[in-house]
Image 1 (cartoon, rainbow, N blue to C red):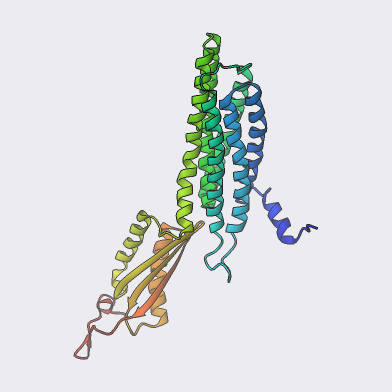
Image 2 (image 1 turned 135 degrees about the vertical axis):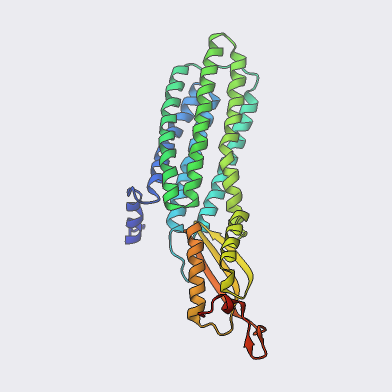
Amino acid sequence: MFRFNSSTIKNLRSWFDPNSPVFLPMLSMLMSIFIALAGIPLGSIQHSLAVETNGFIAAVDVLNAALLITAINRSIRRADFNFNYGYGKYESLAILTSAMLLTIVSGYILIKSLDSLGEESTVDNYWILGCFSFISLAMMVAMQRQQKKKAKIFNLPMLHYDADLWKADIFTEVGVMINIIIGSMLHYNGALTVAKYVDSLTSIGLLFVALRPCYKYGREAFNQLLDRTLSEDIQMELLTVIAENIDSFCEFKSIHTRQSGKDLFIEMDLVMPFDYTLEDNFIVEKKMREAVALKYPTSIFRVYATPCPRDCIKDNKCFCPVKLHNPVL
């Protein structure tokens, strides 16, 4: 028998807390349920493949929201003994799963669209379709704006992904409305076959719009799961930090980076003067950590210090470049 414990109750409460990262995904799921439950049967009854396609995309968004809530609840947990780099990979897995689901649904809609080419349009009521599309568009715009704000606040990849999905849904809904307007005009003039062609081709176009964020974030999620190093622009920013602190260490050896959810793990191997104390090394590390944190607030920075081989000592005199630039040390 399932029992509620304090952790379960706390997670459920966070769903209704406006300051929680899962609050908007919960609203997103409810909104997607409404659009899916209304759009799929309405499009089917009114014989509008574009509206039905939009409903299927919303149905996938329901699953996306459920995955998003689960992934965020996991990924915001702190790193522990079992997962030293945290639980951010849950977000990557959720994004990949979401992308695969939408791809499968897209394949079904694509086959259905191609099969309907050449038939005559049998849409019964364009006014109902237009009203539903307008209401859906208004809801999507409001949701996307809120998701975009929350994504900046919490800086979670899944929230950025969901905000981009809603943005794609907005363009999809605009395409549906244009299709309804053109279809009604063609219907009025008796061009039923042309109206069906427009409806089917619009459905195919909507699929490509909906798949764009899936491809973009799916590729990034796949790279994260493979622990690929951070992007080139981030690497260049880190090199500028190294260049700015070049007088604080003897030699830069290597840099290791990885990403887990919102956390960027950055590790640098530096050669330090052989007689530096732990405190001296910590001062250098702290300075560089603060510089990196200004550029990437969610970064977790570490320096691994190796003592120099004392090759700067000649004739019992020290010509250490670090100490020459920092005579106090």
